[in-house]
Amino acid sequence: MIPFNKTTLLFCGFLLAVPAIAVLAGEAKSGYDYIKPESRAMQDDDFENPGMLAVERGQLLFNNIQNGSGKACAECHGKDGASLNTKNIARYPVYSEDAAEIVTLQKRISRCRDNTTGSKTLPTDHPDLVALETFVRNRAIGEAVNVQTDGAMAELLKEGEQLYNTRFGLIDMACHHCHDVYPGQMIRGQKISQGQGNGFPAYRLGTGEITNLHQRIQQCLNLMRAEPFAADSDEINLLGLYIMSRSNGLRIETPAVRY
Amino acid sequence: MPDDYCRWQVADYAIVEPLCSLAGDAQRGREIASDGSRGNCLACHQLPIPGIEAYGTIGPPLAGIAARLSVPMIRLRVVDTRHINPMSIMPGFYRDPRLINRPGKEYRGRTFLTAQQVEDVIAYLATLK
Image 1 (tube, helix red, strand yellow):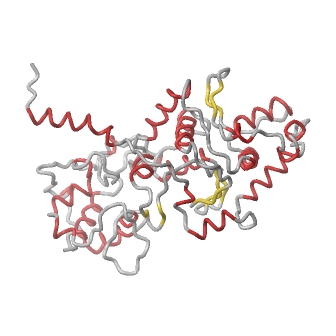
Image 2 (cartoon, rainbow over the protein chains, first blue to last red):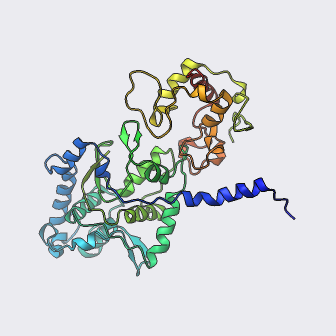
Image 3 (tube, chains in turn cyan, blue):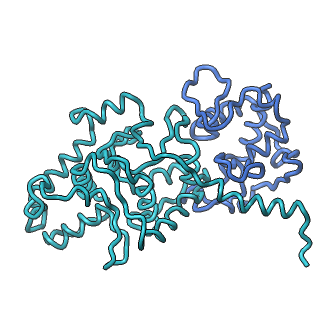
């Protein structure tokens, strides 16, 4: 028989209790609530918001025939995307039953672009694709994020949550540590947010660039001195899905201004 | 494990022996603690160093820490505080590199700080009474 004493049992009990501590209740809050007032003002003013440059760049790509293609997005979806369904935009990332995979808004745009216009496939997160993603997401500004959480998504979300709670890199923190436990606290002069996805693609004050959610996750992993997950890898798709599902109900703010 | 990684022993929630038997330098430790690319203690803790405004509020303020904790207790908290609280957000500054999950290429096999830097930071914290 294994000689379990009282202390060992107590210790095992403690380990089992740890996952329960990790569960965080509370209402989802946009990163908007955590940024400085001057950054909010910058976001609210289309002329001041540097993210609008990406929207305008995406708008040009959308309305015009792109290099190597025979058709413009606008020929099917209307000038400036007038016939796009904003409720559907708010549902991304979605699950494709046919391909049995997570499809981000950018991937949807990229495939539509390849299959319909005959243009050359661009690599994931190519600036043109990020600009198109920003423009299309911006069409749905004010719409509530509405990611599917049942059906095939339920299992994928569990996998995403597990990654969210896993420590990575020399700094050895999980997303959970900052964004569940310490939102509102200061990390060297900046307020930690809940790490919500509703503002992305967002203009980052820290880098001066338009940044989509997957790129932001990669930048965070770099900051943790971790090996970031590759673009369009299973892990980045799962993390992006899980993070956006946490934002369900928050209004789309693309292009938000974030630190 | 890198050849120069020194093993350490926890007893009674403390590490009595200095890492690699090194002596720390408080002045160097103060610089390491406030340097964003080295200790970066300020990212999360308030330190009694004048002229620095952008402190973090994630961990407890460290003024008077040496009045609350002995040096061996401080040492365990800097080296690997998860021996005390497994859920802690605080990085281990001298964790066994084999325990690090998915380190970036340039950080493989490394500790966050060197043993000497850790002892320097401890020597500085020991002055905060």
